[in-house]
Image 1 (spheres, rainbow, N blue to C red):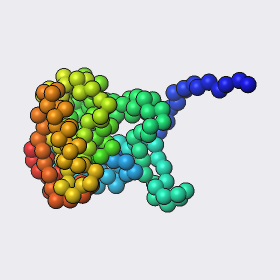
Image 2 (tube, one colour):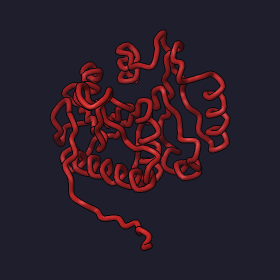
Image 3 (cartoon, rainbow, N blue to C red):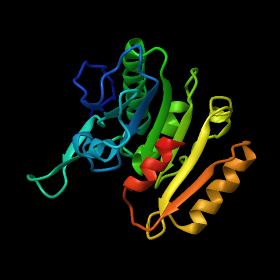
Length: 216
């Protein structure tokens, strides 16, 4: 009996992203915000309407893989990756996010880059920035942390001059105090000193905190 062999083939495909504001030479701040598991960018970006203004543009890329949230019909969500062929999926979304940034910066070359990842999107942006060779003004990990299998030495240089902030709701069952303390101890060894912001809430975004982040 002949055994099947595994092959890969890179194919072009259409990615979707949603944007608040218009990119131009006058744009001072570019926010790239990555949604969590099972979300869609067109709904996720609505939370950032208070962030965008004449000098600030927000772009929400949507993860490349969609699925029905319940059964075979109804609401649809997206995911950045699964455990199946995970390294290929990571490579794909890193290339995708690189293209998002490059396309935006070509239109707004003077803009500083702010990156926010929510939940699964937090791990996504961490892996993305691990290969960055360009400056990141701010990294916000909201209800998420650096992936456990990620060597923080890979981002130590990139984030050396980056403002790092962790945000989570005090009633968020997915962010336990034990897990957070483990993460803080781990990143301290890499020389990273984050700001911590908490709010009364669950696994969700918070408009007041977003305004606070925007005001810096």
